[in-house]
Length: 470
Image (cartoon, rainbow, N blue to C red):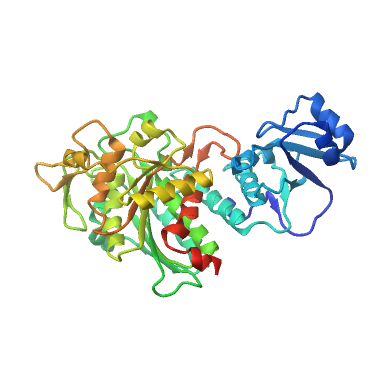
């Protein structure tokens, strides 16, 4: 998989010619001449270069080679995606950054790497330009590797990534970092996770649950415990409540929550945060067959609640419920789940804003602020108590769908809330996990939304600031 190496970043000694990417905020010749020489400055001006954020021009360099001028936003307004067009827009070759001192080179490196990513199972396209970085920021490089991993998993077609393959990839990713990983299946899964098992009954590709634990090398035995849960529905047909063709087309991405959680776990381990974490992935396929779950089935969940299946296409919350119950049993410092859970969140917020629902106002505010600071935003939706009665069932404790056609993202989160343990700080993220079109740093296809925001938020959420600075 692509994560095995970021070939777009050259680390070590320079070999051959290395051209320079100059970050600029003005097209004034007096400013450009010291950077690229008079010929290069004149060329930039004559081509209409105005140093607008993200604007790029390749010019003759003073040394006889070529150089690039990249327009930058004002100080404090940068984001990695400003640099995301460079790998495909620059001529092939090796390049290095020359940026103003107020620009984070790590963010530039991250943006370059995210823009270089492409997924293909066929003929490779043109190779991107290469960034030379003799001493790259470890966080930037590992963030890029983690996002590439998650993108690869989402982009893989469902015939190549079923529940067992997703579980195997989790093992392959986690074990090299020293994580203890168990893959649960068969009768053990049916007993421990009855709702998830019921979703998987319709597929010949049987469900798996990945249960992993890890402790940082500097973590004490009583270090904060972060519990992560990811929805890994490798394909969602809708079950007997069958999706239309248009709704089914991208359902290979319905495991985007699991991909995001796995990418986050990888980054936490690569950065060796002084914490403990547990991770649970529900890997399953929602298919149609004689054994598939039916509308109005009633299933008893791990926590003893009876659940009526009002709609088989609301399977994601069933996959997550028992995992959240089990995760709560360890009384984690923070419980965080990610799922491609509802179309309602996309209708409300569009593709770029993951919906955030949380039972702790301080936690929600800190996560939103952290996401804003690294240009990886969330938008909070309420866990509105007034809608809880909409999940009533006449024959069971709760229905898996609402009786009303409103607030679908909120009612889905309210369903999950019934399976979170009392007193546990819980964050639920409803993510689209996909780019509908190619933009700088964000190629069309699978996307790992929120990873950078969550990672930036963890030190405050888990009281790690003093430990990380010591």
